[in-house]
Length: 379
Image (cartoon, helix red, strand yellow):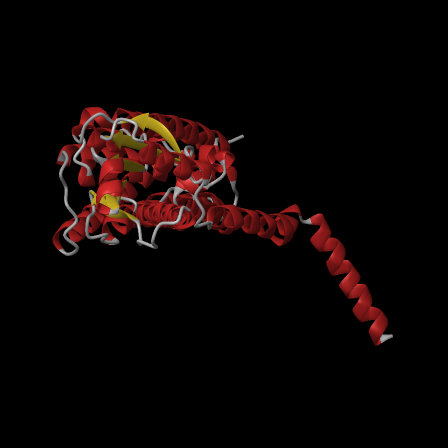
């Protein structure tokens, strides 16, 4: 009898779990989604990385062979030709390429005359992980070319002369490969999501759950005024936190700020507004603070860590995920901060990140306020 009661209780609990859609999502959908997401995001492989070539040898056969070998490996593709050293900074600032291959004049003749020559590999080190990965692949391909050339020389009856195409690596914007240059913008993005978005959504959801907001809606105050009054303190707190982290990055970790200070402040302000809009939007779609916390972790925190370029290079991800990354506000924030602070780009060149963040802020705040006020309006 005891066993029968026990198994009846188990069957009842099983049916209860199957009826709860939210529980089923937590048990099956989220683990599968995380495995697929991590499988595609956490990858050190690079494929078809865009590079530019500055060919001072004017089409020397050895230079053509080097470029063909870089592309034949499937790791790189030449998308631009650079005519002078001054254009290297320009293509990096525009985000056109991840590496520039600089082939000096006399590349092939020096190799034949002196038994070796040098090619310079220039990369954008504002993203340390991407820079080191790209240089590692390129150096390995050059070493493979050396092996082929030496093997061909031996087969032709020559002495084993140790022919070498040497590599000279140049890291732009972060020559010392300081990790602080990468993690400071990412930490700011995380703090903004935690304070501005997550805390806003949980606080508003808690007040919905306790009925406090419903009581305020029958007061003389307008719904928009009530919500704005709730979120303004979080905007100010987040702005203070952002300023503190920025100062720590500059004073403690020697992070440079070559660009406009007011441009950085504008970028941070727009990002905070977009995050607050996301927080209010989540709180308008859920009924409990637990649901708001779960939605914030899955919908805001994880994408900020995984899909913003903070830790894992976006260029390594599948094309579909790259488009998803472009919908994450933190992606544009991190790109804009690196452009302004590390590369010293003028604010005029930051029109795209600023414009997209501004559009996201206006759209998210507007839609979120409308939905939240409608959900709390007395029936």
